[in-house]
Length: 185
Image 1: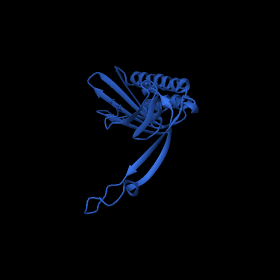
Image 2 (image 1 turned 60 degrees about the horizontal axis):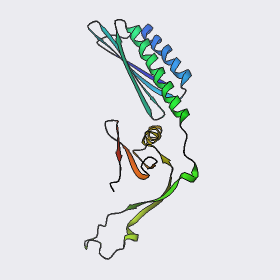
Image 3 (image 1 turned 90 degrees about the vertical axis):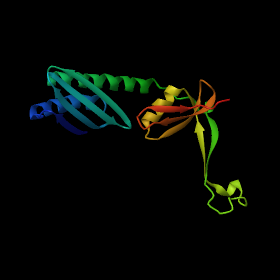
Image 4 (image 1 turned 30 degrees about the vertical axis):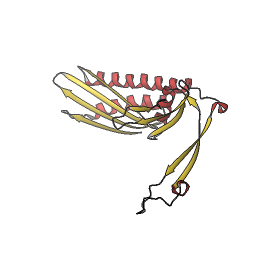
């Protein structure tokens, strides 16, 4: 695991670094896919603030806490991260994918723009398709789709919404939230 520790308005001592690394070893034993952790320690007057952002297998978990002592803040943040990881792991273990027979086949097409001067009146639609892909979509709820897109690094996910029986598109926004496109009938 790659760990980067930064201090704002303070110098990070070797003892504090080793305390943080020992705490992150607890996370490593519970969740072995943790790739990198960014730790930011800040002192503002009498508040000692610890922030840890954990990047693991396509997910991002962030936790922040403050107290009067930096060691207590670090311990509290690590406990929060462990709770979040347990919650995420339980959510994954409870996830039950739909059966194959519930899946539906849809055709995905990418159409190229026509750059000819006459506006493409002579070319047919079939000659402009540059990629055709068939995907099998399993019915899932919007929450299951969010979990699925969190596990991958894809920008969007096309899925069959089990609640509405329609094809929906879930996409990742720049601010880290998700958008859902539903057809209007």
